[in-house]
Length: 406
Image 1 (cartoon, rainbow, N blue to C red):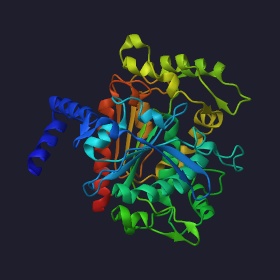
Image 2: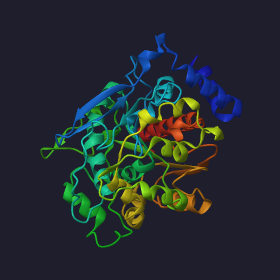
Image 3: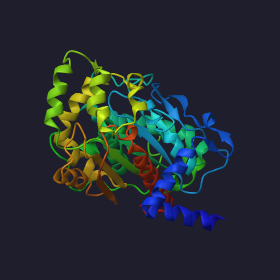
Image 4: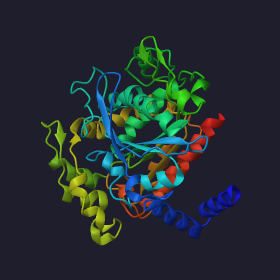
């Protein structure tokens, strides 16, 4: 039985008709799974108090009654600007929950700081720091440890894979770099000194070696119980097996930026873009056929405000420091994608090579241009295939991490 199922999965992943069959079966997972009705598989709202007394909220798939296969990861989804955790659970067809249920890989979608009920970052940034640096540190030091502690044992997972879209890409890179280049015994200040140097220039080519932490390669319960150190939560208490990045690049689309600029109030702290404007640039016009009509019906509901600070950092200081200070220190596997019709970034061959090549110390980097997609990749028709790739990648990373080959 198990061998037959494995052969079927192998067939599904190695031929076009098989891939279509796999997607159809994933879609059916929303209708029924182990005799349970579709509504029982909906993502659940959660709220966690962090070690610093802040709150992070979001959506998560329910834990299965049976433990998942050994090496199963937890995928943590981070939405882009002007969206929320609902981005990953827009409709039954365009939801991570279908793939989570079918493949038995749990999924947690975070409301990033300042979105919906999640506590915002302080308005005043530390001197010499930027929004993305602070958000990445916050993700790495506060959010991910809390998520891991709360749900790792419940899900029976062995690692985390981060899925970062659009304006969530920088914080994902910062968190992955910090996780790779610092030891759990270092103080926060020491960690920053190690990674960022004196803040007056790029760090040296010789980044600090990663401390071997084999204790975190145990399954969920042991890793989740990895305790506290020196009275503070151990920020190394969760294992990071990989990151998936999409919707962010190195060469801005000048045409779109020109259209966005008049809508930005420089005196505001947050900006709300008109839904019609977002539909046109992020989903493309309905006449193109890239996006299902059902998505246009809920765009007003999905729309939220975006922090001016993160928007400004993306086109401001981020390009000057992200490679040397962060990307080159990431060691976990990286999967990167831009859509051919991205409204914000140019998906040229040179740009793709430039971005992916910045992760020079990653054990594995894959890149590609997604054809037939739009900026909001998970919301367009090709997004179903993208979800299948994301979950497949995460499963590979989780198993490899559990085997100790990363």
